Amino acid sequence: MKHFAILGYPLGHTQSPQLHQRLAAQRGWEIQYDICQIPPEEFDQKIGELFLLDGFNVTIPYKVRIIDLLDELDQSAKNHGAVNVVKMLPDGRKIGYNTDCIGFVRTMQQHDVALAGRVCVLGAGGVGRMFATECALHGCDVVMAVKAKNIPQAEEIAQHIRTLRPQAQVEVQDIASLHGEFALMINATPCGMYPNMQASPIDPAILKKVETVFDCIYNPEETLLMKQAKEAGCKTVGGMEMLIYQAEAAQDIWAE
Image (tube, rainbow, N blue to C red):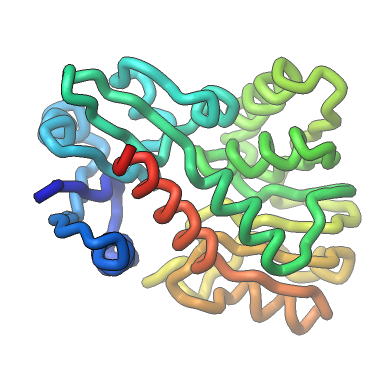
């Protein structure tokens, strides 16, 4: 029996075990899939336990931190500077991948949302980095909106994007004074996630100038941001489909 897990903190919201068990059953696999909730101060002491498994998923806040502990990165992880899937090889090597980008693009295709025009990404963590990079690689003009303390982190991501696509238009704004018109706004923060469901990452007034809002949170199914976006007349897309698509891609990697 193959043994997998999800690494992150906190993980009270996660539906990954149920999802991966269901997807594995469809493949005829019998797997064990655990939740590995490691507080940041215990990360260095406990991460070794994960490398004894066949593979694992990575979520907030470790998608970037895990990179230094891996032996190789797939091109997807190199592009996005973030890892959400790790595979252990029989020879002991640890390989990092990014399947969030696959889940994101497929979700946008399913909902007929073009990756074009001006896109605002809220947040500059591992998944925010992926969204900003993927949108820029598709030719979008990207605005990263972050808290003041995270502006240097966002500027570093902007510079990374320019090394991949020198002509990319990437701007960083303070989320507290976010302004502009956007074809697409993406919430890449945990703001609004269970159990803090009465929180929204932005002033809802900005939504009047947004066409589509994609919130990658999947628990709850409809976040406060999505409710605010609907009231403002925006098209809204939740995070469950992205979760499913990235999980399918992860299992494809583990099955290779």
